[in-house]
Image (cartoon, one colour):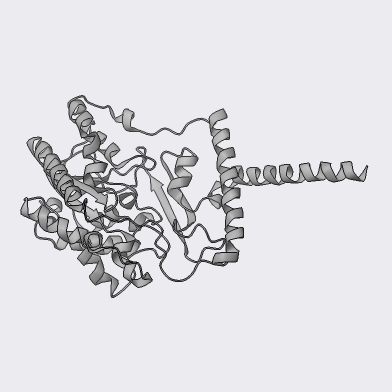
Length: 359
């Protein structure tokens, strides 16, 4: 009889524990997410604003996070961070800022997003086209919304992704569809009703969350319980010497293609690379990529400029600022509030690019 009770408790305890955690998630899902944009995707939030504590994406193997900050994360009906776009089109210039999670401002308060700083420092109308849960080229769809008026395009990407992979790999389809209008409501992300799929996804998330936390407990024997103070670079990349020239040529050809196509449509076009965490802080943690990787932005900036493509050296900008203050979140793959602000200041100090925002 005792054996049967033991077996019953052995089976019932984890089921009860799981049910308790699942119920807690349904009550306060923000307790289980380390980034607001992941919460918005998982919970199918559309137009919403939430204040929550966020920690870095590079320190997940540690049970206790060292750098945690309270941020407000707000998105409009299109699922992008709010900026300063004026729909009547009277305010000039009107800028469509394209990009991925750096442009979205992952792990950054609304006030610290890159486009927020550009809004504060210029009189331009700016729309942040980085949409949570979508690829960077998704934002090109806003150009097919004839109710939205733009005359400037700012293409951004990360070193790891590049313009060719991010935009040109699927640009043929966009060119074919460019003259086919999209209605405003076709770009709006609606909050979905809770259904079986939603509850199944939450179940999978909770199971994954428990597995990752259990792994962190076991890994604490090797790494310790608390994340260290130093920068953690978890998402590195390397451009091999035998392929870097081809990669750079692909980047130039892609940027020239984007420039030619959109210039023919009456747009002014600019380009920006967001430097990787390893590019700015790699040497501080004894991570030194080969010269072809470390100097990529220096090389591509020079070549872009020779081709008449509007850009600036974002790497040198942040390296100078880094001597005064942190520009990256220590345990994250994204810039911090000041990093985005410094980058905005450098862009507006550039004689060519500042004209895009002050026509």
